[in-house]
Length: 281
Ligand SMILES: Cc1cc2nc3c(=O)[nH]c(=O)nc-3n(C[C@H](O)[C@H](O)[C@H](O)COP(=O)(O)O)c2cc1C
Image 1: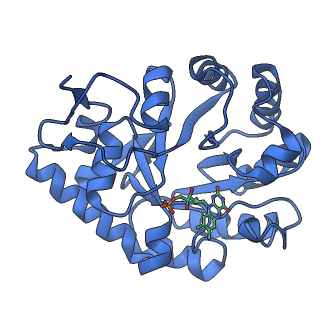
Image 2: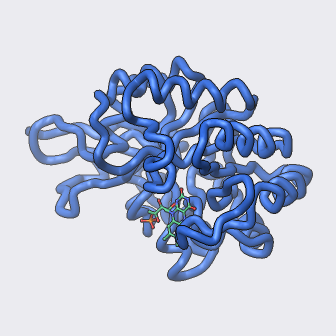
């Protein structure tokens, strides 16, 4: 879908819609299926150096498994996003380096998971965050993304976004935690009420002031959800549960629905609507 193509962190994507790390993205067959059904990038399940059996949500076969698949998919021209976890700065940097050498386009540091937060406390202070990010940046050339914890951050968003940027991060993956009862008119891109941050995506979009690209994750099940995420500042969206429910085909469906909504609203490109939500309060 040409209308949904976008540049994310300097990487040209065939679609702003992609899978979220985890669901159906751990095994070779699953990753090939995701790659085949959709023109957007493919996102790998989070991996660490040696692989994990526990915790269950981070079970993975380890770095060599993912690096081999990355080399194969990159040789076919697929855009690859790899997700990294670890329990030391050195492990994160080492996993990121191996994936970088395998040719992945974007490295997503999964700083959202409790497993990583407990071991590394990346958000304990701005200085701590900076030293962790610089260790990874120094080991890699790929575009760096950080997946944010959806809640519990004590650091001030503007300072955090600024430090991310200065450490060489290009993309923040943020929670698409819009209120369930959000009153939004899609056609006019207007929300009822006073101007305010509508979600973590929207908050970081406003605070980063164009310095970082934002990706929305959470609750993207239909084209309309993707459209609203884009209106609130997301340059791209990630889909998790819908893929578990209906398979990899959910990506193409959401992409087509988003494309139809863009056409209905007279937009030639998804880039025309990013962050354009307004308020009628
Ligand atoms: C079974 C499962 C496994 C997941 N594994 C990971 C993972 O390895 N790394 C990660 O960053 N997020 C992981 N997630 C979180 C998803 O990437 C995503 O943030 C979450 O499912 C919210 O999106 P959704 O509302 O579309 O499901 C996982 C989620 C599920 C349901």
